[in-house]
Image 1 (cartoon, one colour):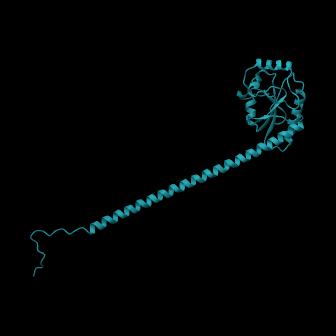
Image 2 (cartoon, helix red, strand yellow; image 1 turned 120 degrees about the vertical axis):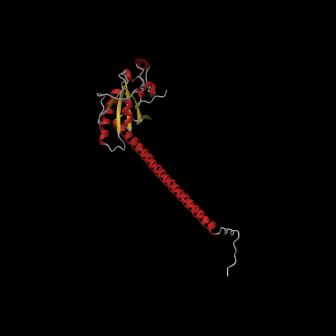
Image 3 (cartoon, helix red, strand yellow; image 1 turned 90 degrees about the vertical axis):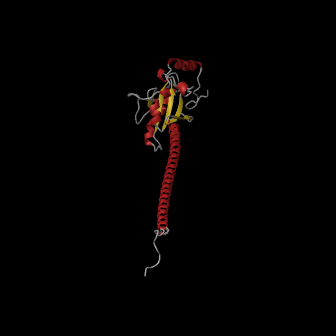
Amino acid sequence: MVEYPLGAGGHLNLAQDRGLLDILARGTSPLLQAAGGASGTGEGRRGVIRLDATNFTRVAMETPLLLVAFTVRWCARCPHVTSQLQRAARLLPTLPLAVRTAIGVVDMDNPQNAGILRELGVASFPVGQLFHRRRLLGPYLKGPTAEEMVQELLARAEAIASKEEQMERHRAHAAKAAAAHRQLQSRRQREAAAAAAAAAAAAGKAEQGGSRTKSTSSPRPPPAPGSSNRDEL
């Protein structure tokens, strides 16, 4: 399995491999199938969001751009990365981000979160993953400092906004074309109905004219027996 450490290093040694297997053995709840949330999860407009199996899906779905870091207690680099994540999260509200962006952390020491190893294939710590409304964009491969995180998030947010703008233009164009097609179909139906009505009216007039001609050109009845056509003197 390919490993995507958050910054340099991040590979597991034998003791860490055993710790990883221990996490797998402690829990089976799939993270990405969980829904809903609860108070006390650390969510807010500023700071790092504490994510777990109870709120991950909802937060990821609601957030246009979400950087999620996965940490464990035996990871020597995790405390430093966490502090940089907190710095970056405090910087985000001060920046002109193209879309709403947030940073979250998943504590892999929590047995409820063990399913993430299978759902996302996390195999090294600390590791960062980028999400767009729950859809996995890919691993975070930039540096571990707050400035590098923010720079990457700014670029990603701009790319997402540009793509969403293109999709919106495409939807507007498709809607306009569909409306024009409906108008054309409606006009053709009206024209067809008017033509049918005109044809029916013409047929009715022709039928009436034929009846009058037939009545005026009918032969005179024969004279009665014994009658004479001579003028009497």
